[in-house]
Length: 128
Image (tube, rainbow, N blue to C red):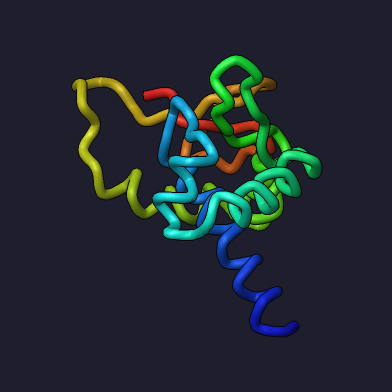
């Protein structure tokens, strides 16, 4: 990969990171100023990311926001993450907030308790 290609990839990632921090999106001009690059360079990268589904542009405000395909990037990392192994030490360290209550995780199929030996649920998430 030559220097200009590496620079374009770096700029594209910086754009994605900047947009991830902004709930209301950013215009081409705002992105150009933030990165310190010409608007034409920002436009080229924005169009490519929009075409691939990583960004979406609001036709009325001309602001770019992250697209749904950007979420797919996290799937690979999350699939390889054993939430139970990562969360258990922290769950065991923290005191229970209310007496008589235990920490629980929600699963679409069934409740899951961190000290149980129930089968792993791929849909679990904390509920309290």
